[in-house]
Image (cartoon, rainbow, N blue to C red):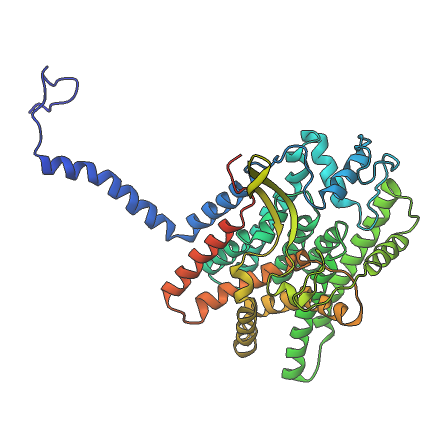
Length: 451
């Protein structure tokens, strides 16, 4: 029997199939593709890479824009990196008269500026180089949060949801694509938390020590891990009325390794990049600088400027204008309208603060009633990174800003994922919140017009 193929088919048109068969043939490939895509998206092993690719795309797109413009505190950190490299800083800009090779931004340890300087050495003095370390840190924070959820024994889907909430929070997103220190310190803080959940306490201390060499707020990560250990010891005491010496070993390893890396690392960095003779002198400078940031902040919902108080952060108040470029339409000499084409702002995704309190309370309740490891981690992480600012606001008039809440957001993302998936909410509520959250992200996306 011969089979007709394209090579042996006789010349001339082939007989036309019935119309309904043609329609079926055209539908089948698209239906199969759609079914395959939907089926794959039901697998968290496929959903996570797609989510990370989307997070990378929105962070990397137009990374160099606006060209030549420094966004927010890039005016400090990028210029400090330029000074470390001996590059020219424009006259009148921050640190323009600083001696080359020495870090002029001594209110923070040198490591973060060194990473920006290294990026400039590799890719040139441009927006991509300034922001690449933060972009890498932001993606690293997303990966670390996924590892935390899984190490705590939760499902891959809950981990994917938590990562999605963190990835598309506006504050996390913006700091993941501008040249500041915040994502460079948050990523190792979260990595240290994952190592602690894996009982790698010495290594967790090492990573936290490295984080502190970027910014002193890594101390709050150390506080969170110590609180988790304290709760573990409290449980042992309630069960046996004693605490074996072996139970103290994780805390000792954590603190000792952290101290060695933080103090020794700062000493080595100061020898090369500052004039401080001991790391303790530099720590004193950092603390005194922070204590001197004082102003008439009234935590009542009224924003005297960019500064704010911890209670205002919970309501997304006192947002900060990082960079705004307006396009104006004029009729003669009269301005008819003015709309932003670029609008980088320090603010949370508007859907996040609305659910922050109830999600944290639910996670705390779940941790108390069931001993759930992840719920306990999220509650402790939120408390350790937020409550110190509440205490500071009660005893002083130190200036604070809404982006201080950034290290809290991963804990809130986890707590919110627990609330959505473990409280028995109907599925349409979860999907509806996800859609609204995506809309909130788009509403705050900084590029309001296509460049």
